[in-house]
Amino acid sequence: MKPAIRKIALERMEILISNAISNARTNPELSQRQAQLARRISTRHNIRMPYDLRMVFCKKCKSFIAPGINSRIRLGRASVKSIRISCYLCGHTYRKIISHSSK
Image (cartoon, rainbow, N blue to C red):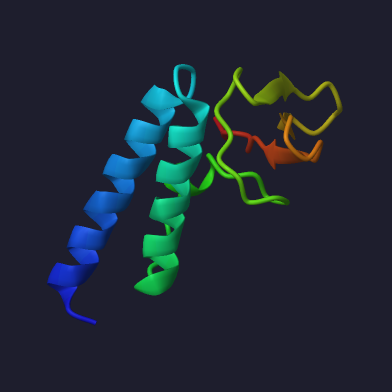
């Protein structure tokens, strides 16, 4: 794959996700569509989506989730420090482990 095509695809994915986040409260259908287009670009061009773009999708139903609008984020109370994210669309809850920083 040409590097120019890859660069353009990454830029378009970033633009679509940022637009989806800004439109999530006012127009949820449009934000879902923009996020799905970004996902389709990554699959069509066989590009791995960067982590900051990947984390706005539910791990189970693969739909776009915006914090506070169609998902809930809580800090974990267990011995392992984590963030719990619950999707309101499918009800799935998953955790992101917060790593310890050594001093």
